[in-house]
Image 1: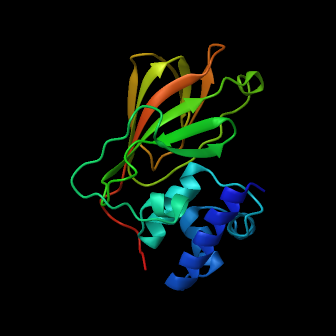
Image 2 (image 1 turned 90 degrees about the horizontal axis):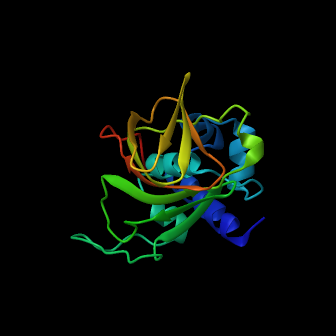
Length: 195
């Protein structure tokens, strides 16, 4: 497994132990099976954005702390120059660049996301995930096929979608090319139990 995945897994385990949560409590909070949680925490299985987002929420830490081991330091503003976002690769082929990772106490997580076009995904069911809060996605280039529970939409450059991310949602690039979009994940104001 990639060294970075193992490092993140070690931070998750350490925080779980500090917070005195059991693996079963974490699995329930993250809406995964205890076995899947154990595999992720041991660094034997990669985790997706939703897994990391829910872990950070449960522990009461910034997602950046899970990714880097460092807490953001800036409290007024931060600038992230072109191509300098904090890299996240948390889903097959998808790349996320965190565009606000240096700011602490964020109410939202801004990402530049690139979804690859994968031909075999085009006719397959789109995997859905959930996380507390809301999300706003703005398409910069390409086309994005979005599944909102039983509703399917195709968005193109200039289109946007704003939704309750606590409901099932998923997406893939469509139209024969990658899709790049700005994703703003807005935290739920009612925080989960944290340590």
